[in-house]
Amino acid sequence: MDKQNTVFRMIFTLVAIAVVVSVALAFVNAKTEPVILQNNENQLQESLKSVIRAEKFEILSETEQETVYAAKNGETVVGYCVVNSQKGYGGDVKVMTGVDTDGKVTAIEILEHAETPGLGANAEKMRLNPNLQAKQKKLV
Amino acid sequence: MNNFTKGLFKENPVLVLLLGMCPSLATTTSVINAIGMGLSAMVVLICSNAVISALRKCIPSKVRIAAYIVIIATFVTIVDMLLKAYMFSLSKSLGVFIPLIVVNCIILARAEAFASKNTVWQSVLDGAGMGLGFTIALVIIATVREILGAGTWCGLPVTTSGYQPALMFILPAGGFLSLGLILAAINLIKGGKKHE
Image (tube, rainbow over all chains, first blue to last red; front, side, top):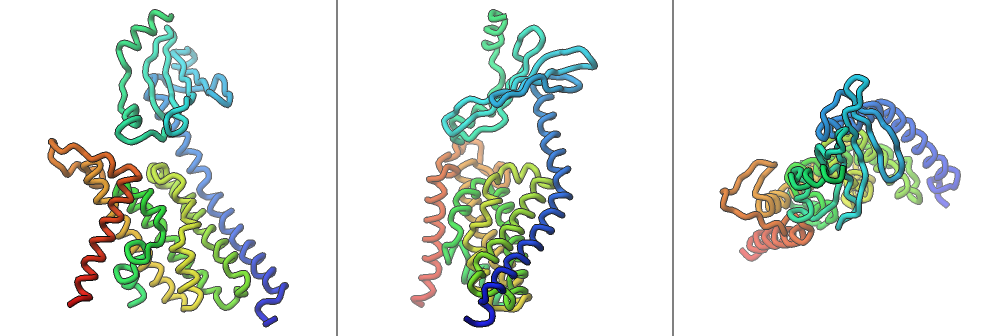
């Protein structure tokens, strides 16, 4: 065996590389993690605001299938946002629905999908159908 | 200097060597995505080439592939975290393809074929050239696909209002078609020169 390929030398090199690399990753992670969390939070708040107008949102209940947020102006509840997902053609479609205190749907926002561009993906451009609002009143 | 320019045309990783076909098909649905993907891969390529070339005398040849993968994966993870933190919308649209740069064969191929045998400076030039060549190739494919498939370029409308976009071109099938036609066109130009 030549000098370079001794077992000790191989193990030592890999361990040394792994240690240096871990330190570098830990450093970058420490710097970027708060920014990434903030980005995700901002995006969530933005989409919550787009389905129902309110000052702040609080998580009411959270399960694997759905998350419910209470939309509040000060201390009064003005509506709810429900985030859940349904099976689409190309995977799960994550939908956020805003409901006001009368039980009327205020807006629907599609958060994530993997549908075919030009066909299923056109659901992104969907605006709330007036017929749906009429039906909602009957249900309530 | 030759080490830099060869990656652009003569040994263009996508259009001539046909390496890295998966990201070239998957991320070329829009020009913005293509530029983001190309530049991310270029940064990883330059950094990994530099480090691997600097360590080329101390890495035992029997464990070199494992060492290269660890070094490449580190830079990919760093790029991924930086994109998520500072270019949020781009990282959302590129999705899983940023972490997948780890297994992009262009990067491992350059580490094995070039960086492990050449000086740091030459390896950086090689990485920059190959990365830029990769970006250029992606932008060419994405230009064809975005104009035909969506009627836009970089998100700006470029076709007349009467044009009905041929959706197929931003679907996977259109990716294969455009890539094949572009490769044919390039071979036609090169073949023509050979006969002269």
